[in-house]
Length: 198
Image (cartoon, rainbow, N blue to C red; front, side, top):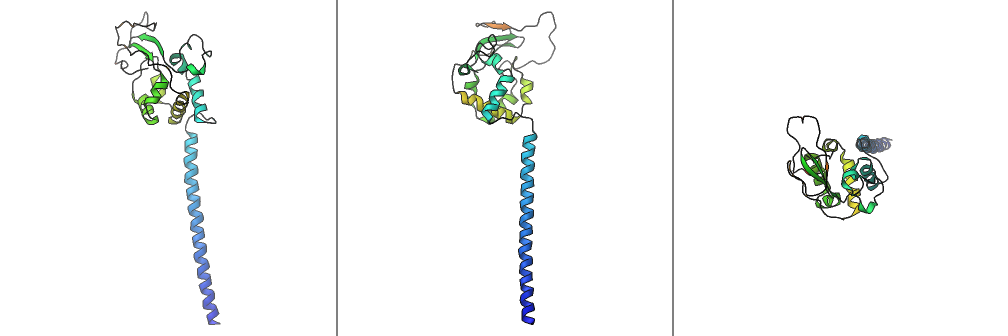
């Protein structure tokens, strides 16, 4: 009888250890699941465009953000009628204003020069020339930047680089659009860097 009780006590102790291990495993699994779910929810809650793929999201962002107006040849005059094969290849028409003259870059060549991280840092840190909406882009989410980058990359290399930007007071040798204000005083303060690109 005493032997039986000792054996039973050992069995109960073993069962307690097994239950303790199971409980710890369940708790650890729950905590890991909670952390993972929280991280996913945080990413989903960040403002960004959702689509079936980053490329599809990037194409949408390029369309609605007005990228084609400056960076796709002919789009400004024939919106929506330029074939995708010509999109974002840069435009050799200058935008002339108080900052000098800026030219819309060939974005296909731009993304080919930089990694994704470099490209995002470049756009967020540099002072881009008008009419590029530089301040708006600084607030764009990294997810949306990744999507735009993926889409532009998917188009492949095409076209040449446009002319270099020109400082104020230099007459552009190319056709240009005059954006000089008329009948108003210019606000004081430092303007955009004429080397910033567009």
